[in-house]
Image (cartoon, rainbow, N blue to C red; front, top):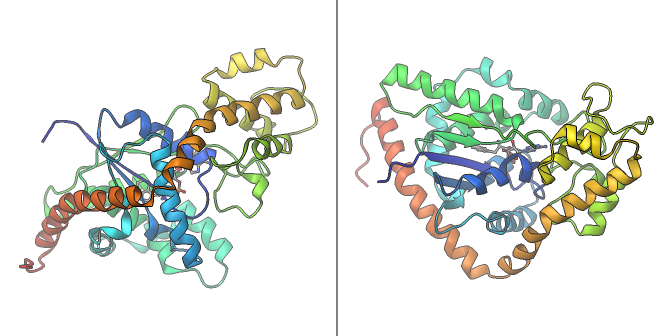
Amino acid sequence: MDDKKTIFSGIQPSGCVTIGNYLGALRSWKQLQDEYNCYFCVVDLHAITVRQTPAELRKRCIDLYAQYIACGLDPEKNVMFFQSHVPAHSELSWLLTCNSYMGEMSRMTQFKEKSKKAGANVGLGLLCYPVLMAADILLYNTDLVPVGADQKQHLELARDLAIRFNNSYSETFTVPEPYIPKNGARIMSLAEPTSKMSKSAENQNAFVSILDEPDVVMKKFARAVTDSDNKIIHDVQNKPGVTNLIEIYSACTGASIQDIENQFLGKGYGDFKKAVGEAVVETIRPIQDNFKHIVQDKAYIEKCFTEGAMKASYTANKTLAKVQRKMGLASRKL
Ligand code: TYM
């Protein structure tokens, strides 16, 4: 074993990967992969907490895995796999569910928002979703979890569950830390800039997919909701649309907010939106080029995710066996 620390993170195959997912998460994964032992998972079991069309979901899973590779994640160096291929995730999730409280689950912001949308029949999976996420993380003795700002509360819950388990049954889990990037941690919707950009939004103009063609990207930014005073100023309260565009531009180019305000002083929204669109097109162009090749090589993708699941299972099963023993279940002999 080397002395590198461990990273775990995942994305749900519940829509196309947005620039929010890329700037908030995937890009950090790529930057961290040399320094850490990394587990990058396609969290397919999380996606089925809301009803999916099976054929579409199956395709999205493979496409998402191919996008991980296209974004620069190396399947040789990292453990990259589908969550459902490692049954220990579901099993640990149940064991942790038995150590979780209704109150803490129903307080989760994402549960409250999603259950509002679901109406009268709120699925139980939505309530238990953060426990499965904690299981994902805790199975691998994860030190660091690179995510966007929206996952911070779920991360805190994973930490609480780890600490609670360690206190009740003796030291078992590493207590994970979040890693939230300085730039791009919370990209907002282009149509409704007070809500986060989401891959499952119905309005196609609300998000930009990392696979959107350049002319589509440019059109989406041209239509992005702003305000009427035509000043390129960072002001979250009063100018959420423009502020979001400034943050996207900053995340793509590395320019500071101050420099961007200076650069566009006296210019109008038309010019600025064009510049933001172009910066995004340049950021995602290499990913699209890679994706076109990788996605055609089904045999390679299959080999990578099969080997990934085998490697992940080895570590996951060891942790699971330890937890089962500590909770008093008879040792498995098969
Ligand atoms: P998901 O699939 O919603 O999002 C994947 C990653 O993208 C980040 N993200 C964003 N970052 C910036 N701006 C946005 N608008 C934006 N939207 C999404 C998310 O923070 C996330 O890092 N529950 C998780 C998936 C998950 C997971 C895990 C993550 C399951 N198990 C274990 C880490 C560790 C989720 O729904 O992500």
